[in-house]
Image (tube, rainbow, N blue to C red; front, side, top):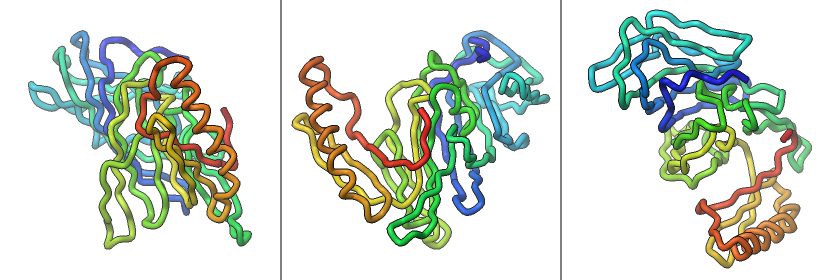
Length: 265
């Protein structure tokens, strides 16, 4: 693992991803609010198996905007370094870029899983497994547990598919004549990159609420929601038990559990 210089640190990521389940690819863009701790002419991030569109990279601050004059990838260290012509000012800034990636079959990063529905038809879902150093396969980032930030996520998916993330949905709208749906999620608490999670696919679900008011859902492949009754019952009782025992409330407004056919953790 390679630790990045502490001169520039992330504060918030606003990420938009558009997965293509037919071609096993995704398009992405992000705006990273950063805190420049020391004046520098470089910004380094972790990145793996992602192609950043060089012409889209820009750093914005109160003094204007600047594009990097050089971009250096290290395949060995899984990093990219943006070299700027001038020193970046200390304080708040924004780093913006667009990129493309692959929905791999390695059960790491943003990856694809194959399964059969109740009719025996082959289907594909896309899900994430970022622990401990694989968020960098989904978006350029400071992929270190200590570099906590807030995450705002938007997913653009085929209309009719379910999209989930850590936080509840904030709003949605139709795109491309209704063929696509853009789903925006509420901002997450400040957390490490490996805790961010999202997935896209066809699902049924069942739900229940804990005594402390947390909505718990179990998502399964279509037609198999009955298989989720036992884990739903266990989850509700366990969450209430932890809340009562530790005297600390569960920190999020919901808890989702998803049956993923191919998962490694």
